[in-house]
Image 1 (tube, rainbow, N blue to C red):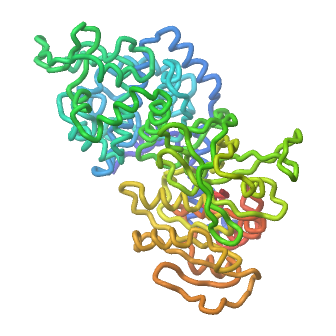
Image 2: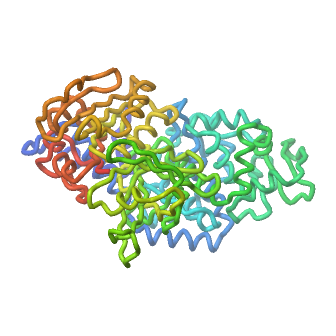
Image 3: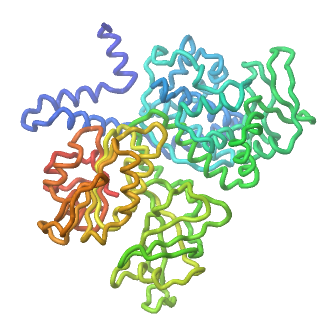
Length: 594
């Protein structure tokens, strides 16, 4: 059993003394009885708040000043963040970023792969002292992202809340199987990153980090990957494809690496192996000719890497400038209408073409804004209308995306879209997702998706992502309200998902135009859905949804009356007292208004 001094040291290292005090206060406050799950959720929320109690703007400015003074630190900052988070393995079940490698006497800090990082840890230490509220692991992640942008790479947003290791004892036992070995082949690379949940495309995109930096001489290698090691672009792929490479055995270490004829660049054997793999090589060729696609894909997988195994991360309020991998810009862009087909009596499926062979890459729960002229005859009158729509097609689908649009009487945008002919140009831009808890919804094990009408479209995106995410076994129930059986959208697609994932997904269709409407004739449950009638009310949610707990999330989307009755207006971040979800015992951190 640890001594009192050890417990005290642990609490201080993790900044948990106040949390413990508040937990005790909550437990003894008999005037406000709360279940333990509610106490735990409240404590987690307070800890999350404290993870951003520092001056973000000032810290970023200090990091930029440091990089301007010592530009060679930039690639090392990226490597530090990568080696901190890269120890994570789904298979082994541990290794999340916790700054354990700052302890150099043993554990991760003593691994051969990490010894060269001690200097950058030392350089960043004064900033940790200046901003004590930020953890070492969060500081390293932020420093890496500032460094990435400093070198011309994409701007990515950092989320905070990583918890530091208190000692080297919290290190993983070995880097073997967690970090790729330089002299191995493509299958080894795939094996290492599959253990982190990476696809082939993500593996190749992440390897593009080698466009900056130099080899770790402490491991016996020498050289740099590209001729511009402080410029983040797609040079790694270009040089990998264009140059003539030959193996070289280094005399001082007997390590083998690839070098080019001019001697200006080098590659690891595992880098060169990308060219021999039939899945990896086409992606290399694509990135060599498409810098924007590479930067977008790298931004996405880089953030994924930094958050491996983490839960409860949150954005700093001062950093809410939105960054996304979406190929449609935040400024208006015109796209042609490629196909249209009538879905039912008042809903149409529209397919819009994307330039080149691009994939939409819109984050889950994000939407696209569509612009329409405000006049009734659709002629420009100096005013415009905008409406957000969530695509129903996979964000990875290449060349186009699909919208499902219900026509509303007096609905300017929906009527405008309905008037268009094939080939018509429509203005789009993407807008930020507004969930405070975003995919992959870390810390949540079960999901209750409650929606009505076209509110099904973002829920469908969540469903598809959760069901198809490699290694994800979390469970979902969908309660979907429609006015009539004919009004149910994506019914066949939902049924297909249930057939494919019967142990993880349940679908409840609630049909009715009034709260207590009788079931339509022939409206019965089937193997792919439960049939209910009326409205989605307290009784149905209690019957089908997962009960309140810290590891469940209820997502709500639909017309204003749906929000009002279930959780309170969408534009209000709070959970309305007296709303259905509040009465059922859910707390704010268990509910997401989409």
